[in-house]
Length: 366
Image (cartoon, rainbow, N blue to C red):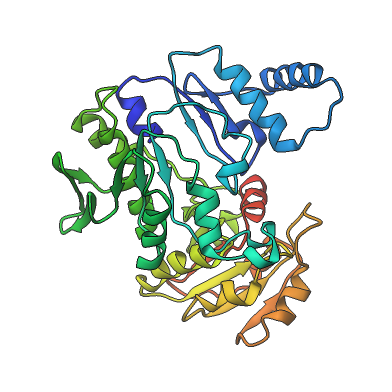
């Protein structure tokens, strides 16, 4: 969405989480990330205002964002809410232009009471307090989830836009992307990102901007912006750097997916490739490791590793033992030794995945 708004010369403030490489990524104002000095000054101001009262890490970040955003009242704010929107620190706005409901899965169930750990409860937490404006619902993994979302927001008077009902996209021959909604269709160049799920996200962003009447997004802005989209740690190909030097002749990807839904869409992309796939895996201890890996089919080798600087991650040796049903599974201490150990052949690819924290370590190490 940011890429399209920039093409229309619309200034944005952006608050996202988590960060991948450094915390500055979470804070964009006037289309630019805050530098270290600006961020430190902002945190000092929040610390002073808080006056030693109890406060969480995310509350500090959220307060810092809204304080800084108040200096740019004419900018568009793109705000990513936390795990469950209803009690999230970002849920303080009285009105907005649109709310986007991204694909909902069973991630973070452990944050809910034991007797409420269901997808219906997650949907309720995420959607029951959405503001009255426009609600854009991204493609969901099942009709049951879509129907549950529809039921939960049925009393919300917002205009509602469901994927495949109110907007859709198709991939056409000759390498182009066709988007369509009630306003008509747009023939677009293919974006410089990989995976069907990324196209789904892009179509949802287009649907949102075309639903909002407060600013004028033209087809040309979308056509130019789609080629400039950057997706960090989402099927991101590492094309140069220290880690790439270890496997010069083969494609090296990093992806921060860490839940079953992420594994499912990642495997869909891998299955579209006619080559051997080698996975390097590191995960947090509280994830369902076997379920995550159960979505991957036809993996040539699996190498588990330790995630550096993450005490809450599962050790690579323990992860290897838990995934012992996999053939050709090995453990290596580091990212570098894992890459070196893989018996790659011509056209093989290497994918490093399992955690956003691991993705950040990979990109920083590179």
